[in-house]
Image (cartoon, rainbow, N blue to C red):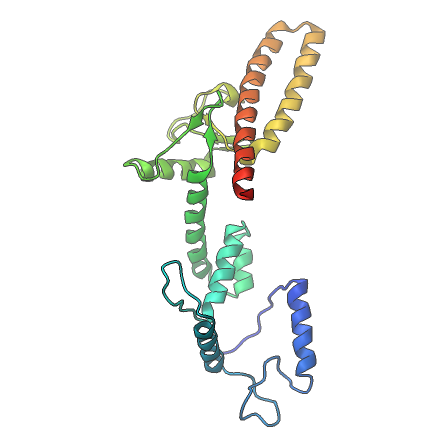
Length: 248
C-alpha cells in the first residue's frame, strides 16, 4: 500500500523542483513518463528510471577505486542519505522519520555504520595525556579490538566535558574533578574550545586565590594549569599540522 511521507529539503532542491514544475507545467506529476504518455498523466516508472541510471553510469564510465565499473541502484541514494545523517550525529529517531522507516530496527543498520566511522576517527585522532604526550594504540595490533571496545564503552559511559576517562569501567573513580592530574585522562583536539575556556577559568581562580592568600589553592590549580598548558600546546600543534596537510 502506498503512503505519503514528508521529507525536508534544502533551498537548492526546492529551486530545482520549481524549475522542473515549470518544464512540466501541464503534467500532474513531477516526472512524467517520456514515451507512451500522450496526455502526460502517467509518471515515470521505477524500472525506466533504473535503466536510465544504468545507461548514465555506462556513458560516464563511472568506476570505483579499483577501476571496476560502478553498479548503483536507486535505493542506494536513500542508503547514502541515511548514513550521512547518522554520521553527522542526527538522532536515530529523526533519521527514521526522514527515511519513513516502519521500525527503529531498520534505521539501526545505519547506526552500525556510524560505529565504524567513529572508530576510524578515534584511531586517526591524536590522543594526548595530562603531560601532552601522544598516546597511541596500534589499530592493527592484537589488542586493537579490545582497546576499541573499552574506548567505545568509555565514550558512552565515562565521557568527560573535556576528554575521556581511560579507567576500566568496572572501577569507580574516588577523585572528584581531578582529571587533569590523573594519568588515566585522555583528550583530543575536538575538546580544544573546552580546554581554552577551562584555562581562562583557572587563571581567574588563581588570581583570586593569590589575592586572598590561599597558597594551597594556588598550588593545586597551578599544577592543573601546567598540565592544561601542555595539553593545549600539544593539541594546537597537532591541529595546525593537520590544517597544513589538508591544504596541501
